[in-house]
Length: 197
Image 1 (cartoon, rainbow, N blue to C red):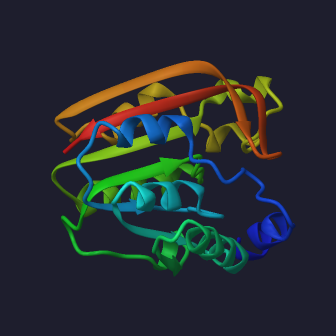
Image 2 (spheres, rainbow, N blue to C red):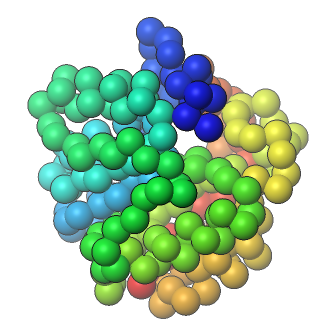
């Protein structure tokens, strides 16, 4: 998988742009800064934004090209992010480490998704928040990005099941217009989740 993403990120510009997801931005504004994790963070746009807002940022991704670009972006903004070169299968943290976890279009096969979503809940501190934005299954009708495998796209019932242990859960599916680099352009069907442990 690292070879796949290295090839995608091996370009002069940033595939998904350098600006954080608008949804991630809006949600971080509602929270007091603390320790935050960004899984599958790619070129670092969300992690770097959080760092500029005073968060203690940890990110991971298997792509060394993505890591290099993320660190370069952080340096350009005069902030520090801890960026681990790890895939889902070899990353781990102590329980109750993070105040927030930000997931931005981090798609994976169903079995791995359930496993990782359970880990995210374990890694959250009490009262910690999960912020998630993914493509819904209806994204197959749009050409603005995301996997073309319906099993890797999400539905509201799937996320309700994955995060049912959280005390507060708000999930919406909506059509939005993405303008995030060349990788996410145009109308998209996204599913957004805010959950509190």
